[in-house]
Length: 84
Ligand SMILES: [Ca+2]
Ligand SMILES: [Ca+2]
Image (tube, rainbow, N blue to C red; front, top):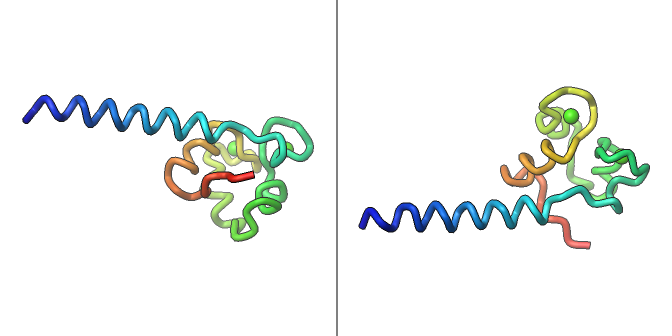
């Protein structure tokens, strides 16, 4: 049954790609259009988001969430999928 392993990996890869694609920056969230999400912008659509969570997601500690950080957080299940 070893042939199932690459198949599973492929399915996972497709799933991850689809997830990442769905999690691209949303200009309705990026209210000021600077290409990154501030805590205030995210809290506007994710009222449950705390500053503590924001700090965890902001891995490069610049006080803003960029597309890569957002994708990682989404994949980790920290941010729920956006339905707008
Ligand atoms: Ca912004
Ligand atoms: Ca950042």
